[in-house]
Length: 128
Length: 342
Image (cartoon, rainbow over all chains, first blue to last red; front, side, top):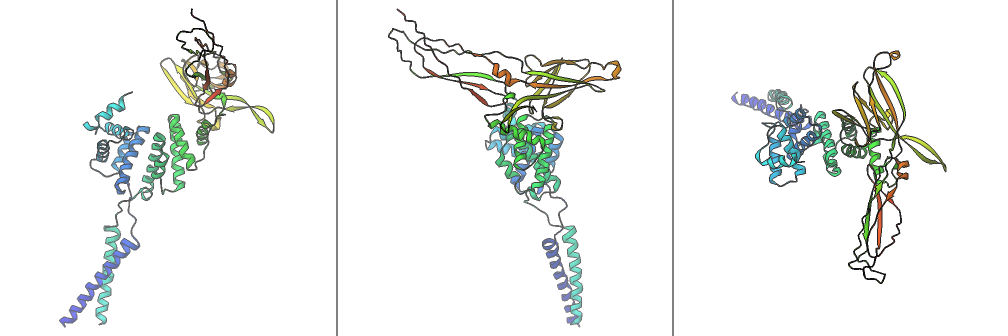
């Protein structure tokens, strides 16, 4: 009697395990649900750096601070200006040319997140 | 045994349903390490937009192509054309527009504006660019063959040839008002169509034609303000077309290319004559650029003074607007004058 019940329980839980495994195969591999949103925050880190750089370059042309802020927010960082500040300081440390750093510093200043290390670039940018 | 299999099947169905709910709705797969082509349409188009603007700034084609790698050509064309349109309507600098046109052409965008700026780049490289749009600025460059060798047997102490070329250009106004059309409008405006008359050869026969001149700056200056327009932004109205809204009561000086020197015309938006009803006089001016004719009449006077025997090669060039150089193939004969010192 006990053996029969044990067999049924084993069959039941074995079935559940098999069903879950099959569901994982279907749901995650064969027919995965499309993610609701694939935003810039999902991009590889080098693309995210490029994204920040592009946002700064675009700001230099269109001077649309709200749009630049919105673009940075899409990286889902907290605070949203972190990627900008990080990249700017990293590039300043690496001695990247001012042509590359300039737009980043300009945007950082516009967003009021410029740091002391950016100060020389701010002077250079404002110089005639 | 049948019971065991029945229970197992029930368990499997239960596991499958619960598993699918979890994998599809509770914990769907999350993407990471994506790249631009995988982004949602909205973000993807924003990426293209930003990359296009960046290209307008730096003109780095290689980098821009890397940024746009893998994206659908049709989407690229649409967004690049949109950015170009936005840049032209918001008055982006000509350099930016040229870089954008370069990119647009590379990705197969075709529009009248792109053609203007794309062609503009092309004609820059051609030496026989439309000379009618040229504003010559002659410069004289003298290359001396060192050292001077006296051929006259006289004592010439410290024969140091000195050349002081002093070019003098006799300028003539090159823009003329060909016609002026007045209309009565609620909001006064000044529209300009800049054109050139040029001779073209067709089947071996020469004939003259009138063509609009795009990418030329037209300035309107008034007391306390200035406005600038570039011709060609509305190709449907002519390649040389540009217009301004003006305020009645003010005097406006109209310039072409640069807001210096004598204006082409001084205008005022005055009220319409009583028989035309209420409103303000708007003007449509047809301007003819006669720079080519003027350039042909330019006189270049160069004064060269020196002592000793001079030998040298002279290269006279005239820098043309917006860019390019036309060599003036002129042979100068130097007649050395030597005054012997006792």
